[in-house]
Length: 348
Image 1 (cartoon, rainbow, N blue to C red):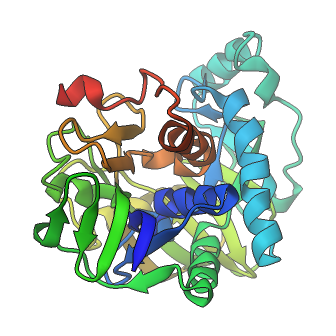
Image 2 (tube, rainbow, N blue to C red):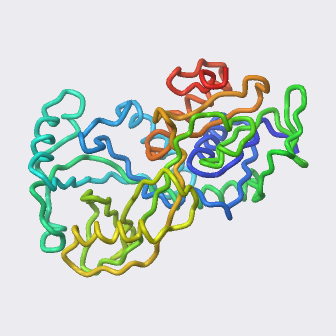
């Protein structure tokens, strides 16, 4: 079969590139091995404009928001389902210094417009252990796992998806195209997540992989459409069921949950919750983060039809739509890549 693009990997990166191909009316085939873990599939999809202990505004947030709202609306229109939901994020301040820092940052020109001190704590009263204070941020939650599964089924029905493992050694490089087994394509786009470190064409890129672990917990009596950030994020998935996470580790980079991080999460939950809870599941994944906390995209210096779109890291839900459009404009319209994300500075 002949295609313009062969896309490898169906996490959030590969799915967004495939959607951009649909929008542009160009032929593609997406291949993926669902038996391999994807950090996207266990992500809570939290989009938070104010992050970190210093309450920093997310890089390029205004431009990202302008892109991800219509970007995910395209999936919703295509699949007739709601995936992006506005959410209030209630941020806890364990120490008075955190409260003071919040108050100071809320007066800043960049972060201040996204930070509010008036919040409704009714959902959590008598259910969580009170902290020094709280603040509110207007954010979003993307139902990542549902979106990926529904989009996969759509692509299967369209004949644009094939479930298969990928072996880089089987790529046959031709003068201006590639052949992989029975698939012929003008271009190949690698969206493999953290497995990119094993990709012989791009394994020299400075990834800074981060393993994350989370718990799925049952908390009877706690009902809220708000996200609570208090040591961990607590995000309701369905009645009584919550996503609680996530940890960070830069070693032991695999998808196996560890007892050490489970204990860490349980200790944190014990400091947060004032009502009983039960662990339902424990999951782990490796985030394709990068040294400079910027996505990676571009082409191989020798084989110009071999490309990568990766490195969305912990903020894939917010970064993805803007940069997928930017990347496809580079491929389809010969637009220049932003220097912040262009891999040519690493590959020479």
